[in-house]
Image (cartoon, rainbow, N blue to C red; front, side, top):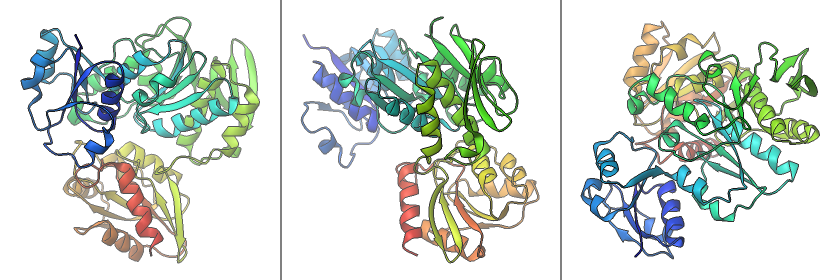
Length: 449
């Protein structure tokens, strides 16, 4: 008799999970709070499934042997606890994908509050250029692990961006090398406390053994104290470390077991900003500990130009340079984008209708004279305006209109030689499907000026 899988939450990971489970003999039930999801039938074309959209998931538990939970749904929800009591296994998409990957596949994983996507993309490019086996760049970066799990073979590498929301539901998920960039306040509406959020981040090390590697930011006191049985490598842009990556006399150095490998000058990096130096140092550790050739690492560090929606140059119009940093979905990420700016900057904040209960005051403290004006809209406007007032920042403009009017307002506030930076410090949900759509529409508007 077929086992039944209940997929709760039909975004990308839910669709991919449904397809994988159907291919492997499961009866598939799809479920979402929304009773209608445009385009979903097309995305699920070619598989048989039972639709239970709009039905409360607790009403479907008697039919399920396995539940795949969307990462946006907390594992402590009452219906999840009920499912577990009934003997239903509850896991998330990355755990499911891991189980269906060839067991000879190496998993190189990147976590952290900020910088995950850039570091994952950079690390993926390094492994691809190394040419050993096939490299899959998957996870929270936008392509579910379940989408390519069945294609993996022994000797391949999955470079995976792993978010706390995904790690919350793992069981067997095992990283051969895991890098943790930083931990700052984020998603407190979801995790309810920093301790819970930190614990979810640390789960990437949970199933590691003494033969694996944990790559930790030595400059972050929370990260550097992460519990793990794996061999520890540290990275720091501020001081030398015994084992790991650091900068000496302007050059990136990797040292492991007493052997030093000089790499490129930090100024030769293809991505700008001190935060990207940290990202690169993490990628160096993850790559070299897994046997990637140093000359390959050097070449990719020089040529990699970053990822879409992360301090992405968009256009220079009338002497004003526009940057798309739609990936800046929390204040700490936006602080790093502001720090990377070389010109006086008009900053666009908000641009979403989802409240993560963030504290925006540290953002205004970090302006350091770089931000000449702020334009803000969306549901977080009141909180952002209050933070500005608390920090004595006055040149802030609330914009109730759409993103195009917001861009035009920023343009009016900028002078020749200035930059306009979209780095919202907020999630895009409620106004856009995701940060990618927000960034894409921003670029379309700017390029139409």
